[in-house]
Amino acid sequence: MSGPGPIPPQRAGDLVDAASAPAETRRLLTDWAASFAAPDGTWNPAMLEWATKALADGRFIGRLWVGPGGDEAVGLAIGLPPGEVGGRVEVVSLDEGFRHPAALATFLRRLDAPDAFGPLVELPDRPRTVDAASYEPVTRSLGLVPVERIDMRYPPERPRLVIAPDPTTRLRNARAEDLEGIAALTVRAYGDNPVDTALFRRSRDPMTDARVGTAAIFGTAVGAWLSSASFVIEHAGSLVGATLVNEHGGALITQVMVDPSARGRGHASRLIAASIAALRHEGRDDIRLVVTRTNRRAERLYLHLGFVPDPSTSGANWIHAGRLGLTPKDLEGN
Image 1 (cartoon, rainbow, N blue to C red):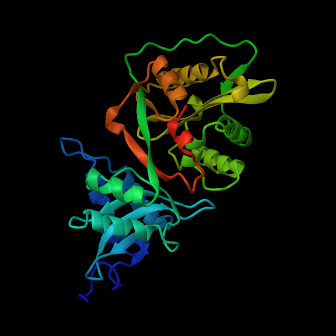
Image 2: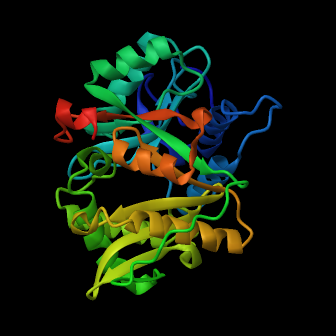
């Protein structure tokens, strides 16, 4: 065993609470963030800034993987502890020298254990520092499959979207008191979209997840909620559609949803047009949304409205289809 190091002496291969060794956590997280650097060497420090604050106020949930010396970390995982359906890891980083398939497999299988994040139902896309030929076989050996997601941006030079109003409905800004109605709408709107539902499932009760997710959007977990650019459509006193927008590296249209009973009437287009108009009125041209590639119906709509895919943001969430109750047909998309 080596002398005093950045973390209290442990056995090699142990996992320790990342908050117990903030310097090692920041070091590995900095390496992870720097791997996303642009060609000019610049990179977004947002995750590192968030982690530093979370470490300071006790909100950080992560595990450090102890290296051979027993007092230094060679791996970092950040995520959510297991919910009713399993745990999710959002960041995986390995130190140089531990990015080969054998070390990666050992680390991920360790994270799949009950005292870590296991049983795992989600891993992030391949870390930039890990070769694709290493990552895919290891993740598949754990029973995970990739679900591709991509950013789509509304180009600043595009003209304003003009969508005819529907005189039988009311379009208005979303309000904080709409939380329960929007949560219920979420359950209805995503009821026939099992893959997107699985990506955010933590509870076995869809309404519980919808309430938690909507509260996160209305709060600051996703980034500041932009109520001025978030809209709902009402019909006969009920919410039948909504767009929710957050500040998240620009203006992110976080949710676009329409009740299945109200589809085919142009509501999604009206909502998106209203959000874009409100953002442009505020001088915002950095407008984007994220689409799951299995949701072909939504992707076709966004392309039709003028959104452009950003290939540089293409990535995958690796999910455990079996643990999330997904079938091969679900993964084919619609």
